Amino acid sequence: MLALLDLWQFVARPAAAGRLDVVLPDITRILGRALPVTALELLIPDAGNQQLRGWRCEAADETRSSRCPLPAAELSALTSWCAASTIETTNGRSRPRWLKALPTLSASRADLVSGAGPMAALGLAGSAGEHSALALLHLRAGAGIGPGLRGCLARIAAGLRTLLDWQDVRSELSGLHELVSQLRDREPVRSTETIVGADGGLRPVLERVRMVAATDVPVLILGETGSGKEVIARAIHQGSPRTGQAFVRVNCGALPPDLIDTELFGHERGAFTGAAAARRGWFEQADRGTLFLDEIGELPLAAQVRLLRVLQDGTLNRIGSETPLHVNVRVVAATHRDLPSMVLAGRFREDLWYRLATFPVLLPPLRERKADFADLAAHFARRAAHRFGFPVVQPTGTDVALLSAYDWPGNVREFAAVIDRALLLGEGRSLDVATALGAPRVQALQPVAAGMPPSPVPAVGATGTLVTLDEAMRSHIARALEMTHGRLEGRHGAALLLGINPHTLRARMRKLGLDPAQFRPH
Image (tube, rainbow, N blue to C red):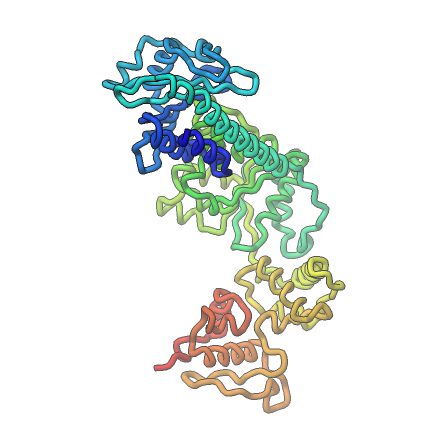
């Protein structure tokens, strides 16, 4: 009775809703502590009653391991043994219909486990009374199934059935989450937002988008990080006949190497440990729509081979299935890497490069789009005002001049972040672009002479004219480096003192000719 109490206490805990291969070893050890049980095997048929999935756990195994799935030969022998055995259930002794539907084999259970003790076969009946699974309790050699143990079997079966009910709930929740994800990803893209720079620096890019959008030709967008590659990919989708279908974005650089196949191509239920439900991959979710493969250069070579097959044949196989699936997907890829150099180095497949680069689109960096800065500043100022609950503030000519003087290594992404910061620093009343970029608000510092520490001076030169912005920024950064003894990152670094990203600070220092080593104590 103690074992039954422990069993029910376990299956009543939320932990029982975890993966079956994780919780079954605990169940087996609970039974083995008070009953002559040496191992537990659980057999569950698939939806079509054509195959079995099986788990086996040893009561004495302290490694918390289980075997899933069991080898085909072992499952076949188990099927034959169960077909010739009495099934103990909570509703009498009967034969599961699905057991009769499984292929009958001549192997015997005795052939499989040499010297094994007796076993008890428990039919785990569902709410409709039909057996939805079988549990096999392996007993110690010499242990008989007496009245005491027989009286426990029905209660053990009920506890195991509760455990499977938890698994059904977990699988159902997983399926619902997957359905919600698919519906969200397949929501048609409806964007009325005008691309900033369409009549300026992006005019040649959008002309190429117009040329290719109406076709199904793969497109490769090349551009620096943060330059707006996803915006161009969405423009291609919106200008195509697929505009009413799904636009699915996948960041290839964020996919764990061991999950790339299942994320891109999907998997069947039971394909691997933890696959409680079938899952459609990104290609299936984008069927009849557009799949945007961002950072395509991060894909490992093995995944590149499988991607090439989908691009060539339009077919794929889910993990755990041999049935090919046809998909109708328009692929748009993007990268900031130099793919031709990667091809020469053997890190990117040449045949995949030729397939993707049928129609390349080169996106210019932001520093080459100076004519768009005023429109971009106004656009991101409106967006920031709506996000933070401030009134809309228009950038001034001075603001645009300050923005134009910067090199923007982070491109549009960094530009948007600076405008957000400028609005916050201006407390919603103005854009404090100078401080947001790292320049001083009140006074500047004199440029640093070679090898000499900086000294503060007014921002006005000897002739009464203002120093240039680069000179003011150089002096301000030099003063911060002096205060931090040349340290750039961390709690006591110049980047934190200036309120900018360390990478941005390094880029700005290179442009201004500042070396942090000259500020470090010797």
